[in-house]
Amino acid sequence: MTGAILRLFISIAIITFMMGCVSAETHETPWKIIRQPEAEKHFNDVWFADDPNGWTVARSGIIMCTHDGGATWKSQRSGTRLDLNSVQFIDKNKGWIAGEDGIILHTEDGGNQWIPQASGTMQQLKSLYFIAENIGWVVGGDSGMGIILHTDDGGKSWYKQSPPQNNYELQAVHFLNAQKGWAVGVFGTILHTDDGGITWQVQDSKTNSSLFDVHFANERNGWVVGVFGTILYTDDGGASWKQQGALTTNHLDAVYFLDAKNGWISGWEGTVLRTINGGKTWMFQPGFTSSNLVGIFFASDKQGWVVGTNDSIYNTNDGGATWQSQWNMGNRTLRDVSFINTSEGWAVGNSGTIAHTTDGGKKWQMQNSNTYNDLHNVHFVSATDGWAVGDQAIILHTDNGGKTWVSQTGGMLNPNGTIGQSGEICYDGYNHFYGVHFVNSKEGWVVGFNGMVFHTTDGGETWEKQNIDMQHPLLTVYFINSQEGWTAGREGSIFHTTDSGKTWNRQNSPATEPILSLYFVDQKRGWAVGFGDVLHTQNGGEEWKIQRNATKDALWSIYFANARTGWAVGVNGVIIHTTDGGKTWENQSSNTENWLYAINSPNGKDLWAVGLDGIVLRK
Image (cartoon, rainbow, N blue to C red; front, side, top):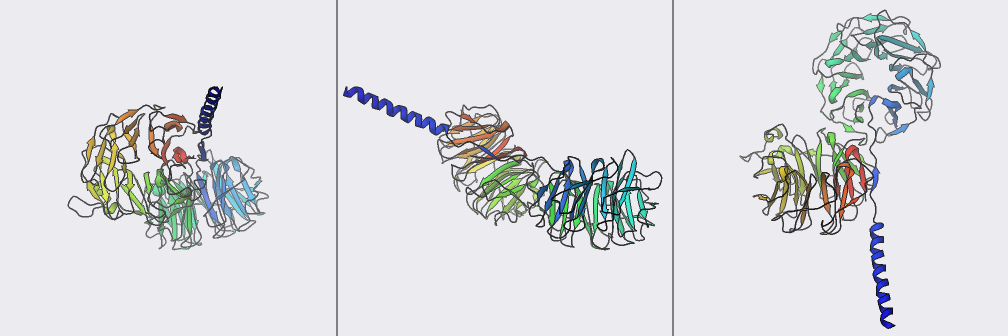
């Protein structure tokens, strides 16, 4: 009897233990999407009533407003899905918007409520301008015909004005007062009125190029911009127009002058031009985006904004010498992520994206990378010191948590020991860095094109090239300490060093496809992933073996919390997990099919994954 009872108790204990294991596995924290991909916004115009209060409009009925100078932007309900092309406010409360299918919207309360106004047309409305709360004009057109609308009661009623014969589609309008105004459009059209639009006269632009915007500083001095870098200037109110400069062949979409001397132009492929002498000379502003910048506004000679395609809202507070993004990531793909604790982390990605979070990834603030090249890898060793690498051999460093990022590529050492420039290390058209790893705030490595490895011992102020028997790109690098590390890349290549990279030795790898990520928990045990394979070593890489895993999809990134517990992420939202060092792998649900490019954890318990279209997951 006693033996039977004992066996019963043992059986109950075993069952209880097994149920506990199952329960623990069942209740393991799931992956949650904490940042959904956003629809990409293409902004068309921007206007500020004063320094804090501004609005921008976009395709698909999008209206965004700010009450802190652009530090934060919030959406307003437009009540439409039509494209919105132009916005203007005469104070922080009263404003108008014009757009597709003849839509005109009006607000009396800063945009809390937008009310449609009857325009009497279904034509495309491209531009509006008000000189007082009652008096304004709207221009546009389609199908080869232009339209001009006028109101003298704040838009309660709009009526057509009659431009001259052969009027083509109009793109922009600008008025100095209730009498004098100009409108421009396709085929070099410039129209002028001296009587508030009762009559319009054609002015000779001496061009057949389409013209997109017009701005006058006073009754005599005005500028028009258009396709293929067209800049026209008049100093006699438009009686004669002259070409001004030929700095670019990019389309120029917007022009804004504060006075007869100080002006700015924005256009395609991130073009921003500035003049301080009325356009006698135009200067390119530093490149900060590749997006088309179609709207511009300056509140002073220092403070200005440009907006455009691909979620572009940029602000300058030094007249355009530098520009900072004021929009979030939008749907920019994130390539890598680095967290230093459960709250603070950084993500990098396409078009120079660097984003920072202090709440565990729920909200992200863009940081100014001063580049629009894609960034592939980021590594932080503290709350202040971090590095990011990417296309065009770019290496960026911050020592203040990303408030400022500085290029370090200029510190590359040539073979003769002299400091070179970034162009001197670019041996082909694919001069990209893909991996960066630092063991402390001073010593680190970057890897990339043509088997390039560079090493620094002064925090990146100077970089020395290391020799490695590889002519193909190296895609990842990982160091366990200042002496021992690994790098890997194309064709399954893996290299190992025990002397900080002075010598690199090729290791035998069973992989033939690119290796995209490496992770070691100590000097012996490590893993590598790439196109469908998980590789594992228990002897520092002297021998690598393929582990069976739960997917044949490409895996982009791998992380291990300890020698037994690890995760890998990859295409189509795949996440695989092991609790036995990789002997077995199981799929975990990501609730997304977006590709996941990186996984990271600061402590082995809290994990983040990032990927296509800016998606962020947390576990």
